[in-house]
Structures are given as C-alpha cells and as structure tokens.
Amino acid sequence: MEGCFTIEKDIDKLLGKFESHSQQNSQTLEQLRDQVAKLREELSQTDGNVAMAPLQRTSVLQNIKKIRTSGQKLSSQHKDLHSSVSRIGKSIEKNFDPDCSSANMPEILANDSQHKMLNKAVCEHFYRQGSLTVAESIAKEGCLEIDENWRKPFVEMNDILKSLRNKEVDHALDWARRNQERLSMDKSDLEFKLHRLKFIQLLRNGSSHQSEALQYARQFQRFVPEHSKEIQKLMGCFLYIKQGLDKSPYASLLTDNVWDEIYTAFAQDACRMMGMSVESPLMSSFTAGCQALPALLAIKSVIEQRQCSGILSNNDELPIDIDLDSSQQYHSVFACPILRQSTTLKNPPLRLVCGHVISKDALSKLVSGFKVKCPYCPVEQSPNEAKEVHF
Image (cartoon, rainbow, N blue to C red; front, top):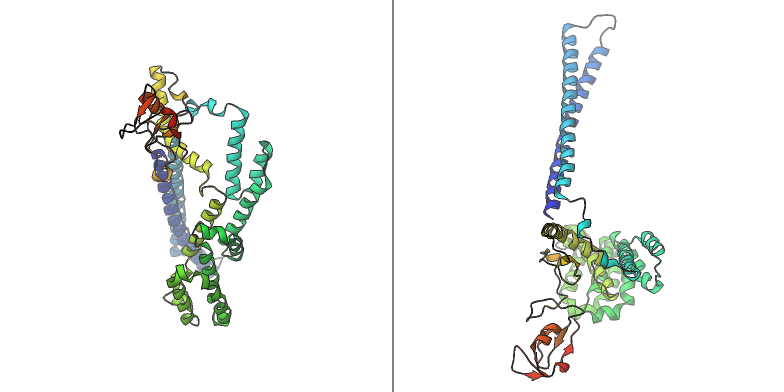
C-alpha cells in the first residue's frame, strides 16, 4: 500500500504541473493573440504601398521575438513534462513487483469445483455492480448455471440504485412497501427516509403543490412513535413553502448528502435481505490481497534464500502476521485461548460442559485417561461431552 500512496503522490504532483503549465500557456497565448490582432488592425489602416513606419517595424519584430520565446518555452515545458511522465513509469517499476507468481499457490484451485466457485464469485461481483452483460458472459464462458431467482434481486437492486442516482424515489418506495414486514423486523428506517424524500420533492414544487404535500404527509402517521421529532421538523417546512425551502432553516434537507445517505441505506438493506454483505467478497479479497502481497513476496524471498520448503503450502495459516487496515478487519474466526491458534475445519472450536470454548487440538492435549479438566475452572467431564461450535 505504501507503493500505491507513493505513486498516487507522484501522479498528483504531475497533474498539478500539467495544470500550472496549461494555465500559464493559455495566458501567454492569449496575450500574443491580442497583440497580433492589434498589430494587424494597425497595419490594415495604413497604405499597403507605403513602407512600414519604424515604430510599426519595431512592434512587428518584438512580436516575432515573443512568439519565438513562447515557442521555446513551450518546447522546454514539454520536455520537462515528458521526463516527469517517464519518472512515473520508473516509480511504478520500482514500487511494484511485475512478477507475483512466486506467491501463487496452485493447490487452492486444484479442481473444477473450486474454479467454478471462483467464477461464481466473479459473476456475483459484476451482478452487484450492475454490469449484467459482463456477468452473463462470464456465466456462459464458465458454464455456470445461474438461477433466475438468484439473479432477479441483483437486477432489481441495480435498477433501483440507478433511479436513486437520478433522484427518483418511486421505484425504491415500491420495493420498500413490498418488503415492509422484513424491513420492520430488521428495524430499518429505510421506508421512512424514502417517504421523507418524496415529501420534500413535493414541497420543492412550491405552494401550488401544498395540498398534495399535505395529503402525502398522512404517510407519516405510522412512523410517529419512532420519528416524531423528524416529522415535526418536516411539518415546519410548510411555513417556508412560499419563499422556498432553500432559504429556510430546513435547507439541509435539500442537500445531496440526503440522497447519498438513502443510496447507502438501500444498498445495505437490499444486500441484507439477500443474505450478503454490502461489500463484494471479491473486492474485499482483492483489497486484502493487495495489502498482504508485499509481505508475502518478501517472506517468499527469504524462504527461497534459506531453502525452506513447504512453509507456504499450508492453506490454513500464514507463516507471518499480515496487518490489514480497519476496513479489512473481521471477527469471523475463533482463536483457541490455549494454543493461541485460529481454529479450522480440521481443528474446530469445541464447547465444554462448563461453557468454556477451546480448540479440538487443545482438548486432545488436555485429556487424561477418560477425563478432561477445564483449564479455566475445576469442572471435569468426558471428552465426548464437548460439542462443536459454529460461528
């Protein structure tokens, strides 16, 4: 990631230089254009058969000199920009290893089933992004059987997100009404926010739509217990409907932040109903991989130098700790408090009779005869009484 930040800074500097040169050159060319136009006007007013006056001749020579100087300056700036662009390429080569194959683990995609799982993840990612044509092409080339019931919610979600980008709320409201019961169970206030947006749109049309807005305000009745203060604020908007809400204390309701908020809220609720995270798993994996790859390449180099084989062949655990940023930190694994290792499918977490949880390997090490004593309390039990825990 440090390499990315370094390249980003270099590119920002280059863009700034481009912008600075562009402004300077535009001003210089504009001045030259004005001077040449002025000179042409002066020359057009003189007799063509008469030789130019000394003052006119001097002015022409000065303009020619300025044009040549400006041309030389432009050429010099072009060379400077060209060298700066070349340095960007060298910086990319310096900060990024073009060959990442040394950290590749072919055994992860050892059979057709695993390849299909990867193709499905890629296909799902493009469905999430609204790139339906790309997703369907991948499904066809990867021989994936896409269930229409699985595909349809993605298509509908992206259609609604597209309408919200265009500040159209009706499609999303229809979806919220159809899923009202589920949204209520999840304690989501999405439907209220959508009604609020619709109400504000009516108010923005002016006093001619006041009665229509007042009629629509009845939609807020069932939201009073949870949103009474917000509804009171919305009713206060009627006081400023003639002069315009943009000049009222409620101008914050008209900002684009309100639409950004509803866009995010809808995406979260829609993905939750489909049993998925808002962020694409493929994008999360890709981001984590970009952050972890430099460390993996470094440890791979050390392993090869020391001729240690098999260290990276274990899929369950990496040989080093990888520090990911806060957006990539999850609590999806259980670390055994005895062995200090993350549990796996082969070494699952087990709940003892007393309620304490340890790993299967730890339980095996603690068995004495036909009994095992909990390492945290004096309770003894049979190893067979331990039950597997699923997080």
